[in-house]
Amino acid sequence: MDEKTILVTGGAGFIGSHLVDRLLADGFKVVAVDNFELGRKENLQHLAGKPGFQFFELDLLERPRLHDLFLKHRFEAVFHMAANSDISRGGQDTLRDLRLTFMTTFEVLDVMRQHQVKQIVFASSSAVYGERDDVLHESGGPLNPVSLYGAGKLCSEAYISAFVANFDMQGWVCRFPNVVGERATHGVIYDFINRLKGDGKRLQILGNGQQEKPYLYVKDLVDAMAFIWRKSSAAHNCFNIGVPGVTRVTRIAEMVVEEMGLADVQFEYTGGTRGWVGDVPRFQYDATRLEMLGWQAPRNSDASVRIAIKRILGKAA
Image (cartoon, rainbow, N blue to C red; front, top):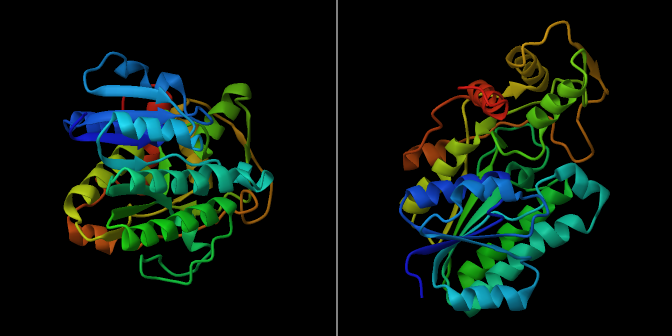
């Protein structure tokens, strides 16, 4: 059996694949699984044949196969990244977040319990807070998500808390802001670039363009996750992973236009205060808890957006 092996669910996804890179660089053996609902094989192609890395195509809802995986490997911890990360799609298919966001978490937790794997690091989200006017702090409430994605993440957090309390487990809940960077499969930067590749003179922007949120570069995010796991040792740990500042959607559009070398692009707004049903048009994190632990984002929101655009375009950052 493998010692010091980490399981990464959703390991072929945008964030999951970067996390795999980070854990391997830190000297861990990594087993990654993905069902390719949103993950992509090319995100892990560079790891083919790499010592200490294994990948399995696996649907987490297929419990017998998940059991078999835990029988074959002795996992030190599970980084549970698998979820429906496309929030707007979850509003169109009401079973999507129940299955891909919550039930995957339950299946992983219950199989961990049966195989005595004690540590879970969970990819949560600002979406659990809902639409709030105050700066978001981990101890703040009530938590009233406005998207089915946020509801699925909040249910998952609740089950992690209960499993930790009942089954001598340890949990780390990492609440992400908006995460940007190369290997993204959707999101505002990805959408803007693809729309402008199709028509370099017009750009549709969902909502009124005044939505503003904190954006964090993906490599900084996985650095924060690894740091939290190493440095926070309570039974149940919950952290906002924050970044200084916020970036307005129209400003993102302007930066994309600049980096693509375009001129005279007409911005066309669909109207309304939010991009889609369930969108939270603005929020800001209180990241004091993580800063007191010893981690701060190395760049602000605007700089994170800028480097993400460059990397997606294949430009030197």
